[in-house]
Amino acid sequence: MNELDELLQERLAKLEAGEPLTTAWEDLPEETAVALTLAAELQQLELPEPDETAVVAQRAAVLRAAQQQAAAQPNGAPAATGWLNAFWAWWRGHQVIAWSAAAVATILLLFMVGRLFNKDTDSAPTVAEPEDVRPAESDEPDGPSLLDRLLGRDEEDAETPTEETPAETEVAVAPETDPGFQTFLPFLSESLAVGPQTAVLGDLQGVVSVQQPDGSWTQVSTLSSVAAGSRVRTGELSKASLTFYDGSVAKLGPDSEISIETLDAQRPEAGFRTVVLTQWRGDSTHDVQFRNDGGSRYEVKSPSGTGIARGTTFLVSVLPDLTSRYTVLKGRVDVTSINVTVSVLAGQLSTIGVNLPPSDPVFQVTGEGEVTAVGETWTIGGQTFATDDQTIIVGNPQVGDWVTVLGHLLDDGTKVADQIVLVREVPENGFALTAVVIEMGADEWQLGDLVVLLDEDTVVDPDIELDDWVRVVGVVQPDGSLLARQIQRVVPDTDPFEFTGVVQ
Image 1 (cartoon, rainbow, N blue to C red):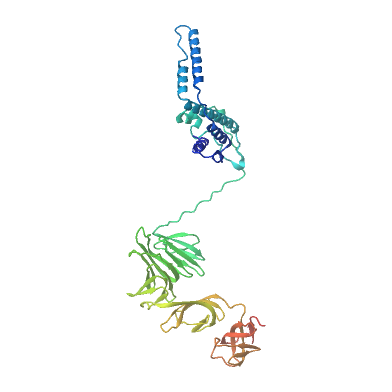
Image 2 (cartoon, rainbow, N blue to C red):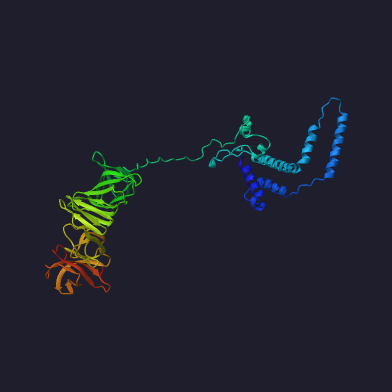
């Protein structure tokens, strides 16, 4: 049965179920809609009531005609009207069925005529143009049509193709000419090997390299797969990430290096997760998927200790002197060195010196703001931070610059800066000058021909005396006055006066 036959059968069933013709014929092809309309009209016809008087008269006439025809035939000739009498007798006894069969036969006759007409109009060959080459469509139905089945043709006969002459099977095709273009199919890159024993190296920025088995380093610029035994490093202003099969992620900061010691990151439904990394230098952030199975392990080793995550987010920093710092943002990390373990909770950090046990966890402090004082003690955003030999300063920030600070609190409340990073240099309203000291006061100094103001945040070199050369860094205030942030004594090697900035 082809699509049109199936569609007609579906809509006929809707008509018999009581659906109006106006909705049943929506979206139908024209020839199918005509057949459906005819069927609906036939349903509205009233079947004639049999007239017993007429039936008796017709039967008597038929019998007389039969007797006359039999008398006219030679003796011994078989009667040819036996089947007619039998049919007529059946008709009289089953008039409702007979009239319904006649109606269906009429519908099929009209439908067959319409199909033949459409087939003739659709049989014109279509030549495909070079710009839109497409295969010639066949008019053969997918199976025996409704008409074939009603006429007694079975599906096997309908599907069996008949022999056709070459002229009958000829299909119009496009001429074999150059279409004027060529098709380019790019080669697909080899898919990444992804699984519990691999990690995807991505989020690449700057210079990222992977160490080969022979010890050489190869720079990577696209997504790559790494496995246990691999070593990854980043250059300056570079970063990368390692995404493990269970969803955990390790992000490497600039100038960092990390190696994969053990890798079997099974998902919860498949088994335990085992990830062991060693960080040799730099900074990394680890977002570890929580596992409550008692057998999974996510460990980050360092030259001075190790930290085992318990479903958490934490930072690891390895300083140039190989001191390690574990900072926990969420969850818990057990930090161990020389058989001493401390539990670091969210908001805390622990520092491990070489051949030393981990420090007791202390609370982390962070901030961002303008630098108003530098030295052993820095003033950043109005907050005072002490520094020590483990404080990392990135970008050489000066007074007036904007920085971020990461530190920790001591038991006495002192804030210690662990890392200070330059965000942007002195703003546009800053100034820097080198001049000789003419006069020194508590609130202002005379430097050459300029007056520079001081306040409680101004850092002054205590060795400065009159007639010394000094370098001053500060800001130009809204009223045009110069406010010094830092005054340092220098040895003059240039002209007696130098000024950089905006003077109003």
